[in-house]
Amino acid sequence: MKAIRRIAWVTVGFTYFLVSLGGTVRVKNAGLSCPDWPLCYGKVFAFPDVGALYEEAHRYTASIVSALIVAMVICALIWARKERQVLIPALIAPVLLAVQIVLGGLTVLWKLPPTIITAHLGTALAIFATVITIAVMAGKAAPSKEHPSKTRKFALLAMTNALFVYGLMLSGSYVVGSGASLACPGWPLCGTPPAWAVTYHLADINVLHRYIATFVGLVLIWTVVSGWRRRKAAPGQAWIALAAGILFVVQAAVGGLVVLLRRPDLIAALHLALATAVWGLLVILAVLAARQLRAAPGGSDLEKLEEAEPKKERNLVGQTIASYVDLMKPHVTVLLLGTTAAAMAIAAGGLPPLGRMLATLLGGAMAAGSANCINCYIDRDIDLIMGRTQRRSLPSGRVQPTHALIFGIALGIGAFIVLAATGGMGSNDKYDYAASYLALCNYLLLDAATLLGALAVDPERL
Image (cartoon, rainbow, N blue to C red; front, top):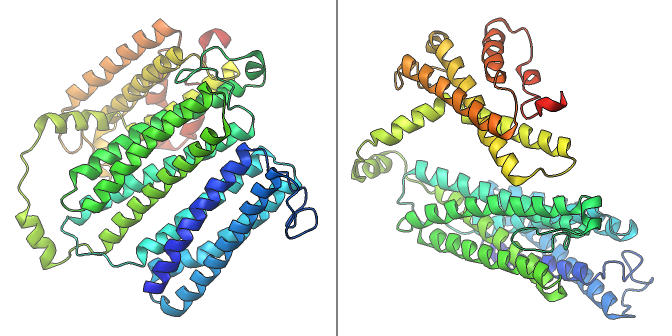
């Protein structure tokens, strides 16, 4: 296992260099400096200009990474057949490598299409994460001093955050590939985009990337705070989370310089390199937490750990708030808000004004929450019978039925005020949903999803 771990960490270093070098090739517009593939002008070594030098260096580094991955797979098959946490990612790596090689060839042969470029980067980042997983899992975890439930929650948070950063990087790749890097002349706000950026909706692509970055940054703050709170149980993970947060801030500032300095090559390449470092750190963080979970205490050790933990006083205010939020069914409301945002973007032919969109989402969330509260009130007797719904706020007795009804009506009034003030959807939609959903659950007449399509439609356009 020691040999696998060493080879894996060397591969991690070369893969990071490969992704960063690929970003340099892209910002230097050197992707087509070698018009053929896999050779360059029909030769193994051909450097007619600096662009071809960058492109050839990228290909040579990819060859080194390929050889290291093959060596790592062979070692895993020899020494880690019974270690599934190492063997499975080791078998996935060569598959991703084959896909990456094909995408690299298509990138050149098809003259740099944005979708292929984005897929090329996405596969490279997946290889990077896979190799990191092998390197971390090949090591031994110290016995965990934390309750498994806490470790599991943090591992899920770190993994979710890493996937969000992955999506952010793909959106950034599409911004560059579509030519939208300078579609917004200002930062952090877009400013007044030029006519060409408006005509081809490039400013919308740029702004969407910034929205995603803001959301990912908020989630990363949550991850850093959560990691720092458990620094006594996992100090290494706390420092890695903090490093990822700091690098994200620096990376965002560098992204601003890309716009303000009109996309200088060095700054643009540094932007991708820092983003890749953030992605790598979050993957390390998630895998470390998963490895810690494998070493979590069990049996008598777990009982001793639970007894040693101080008993927390019940937070009645927090529990009450959580019970009322549960009545709104936030996991359903989020899906409806996603539909709302998409419908508004389609209706506007681009991103709608930020203020109007936020007000519509707020009003929509309140309207959907009102419908869900009223539905919970009407169905409270059925929810008490069904095993899946017995733990909800009303059947479990955490909220009184009268209070739930009043809360639903109050949300409906608030939604009416917000949406009426901003010209959003009609107020009757929430009552239509409550009645329709009740009938659907009881009689299975229709598909509920078909009733939610007009959530954010402007009544004046009906």
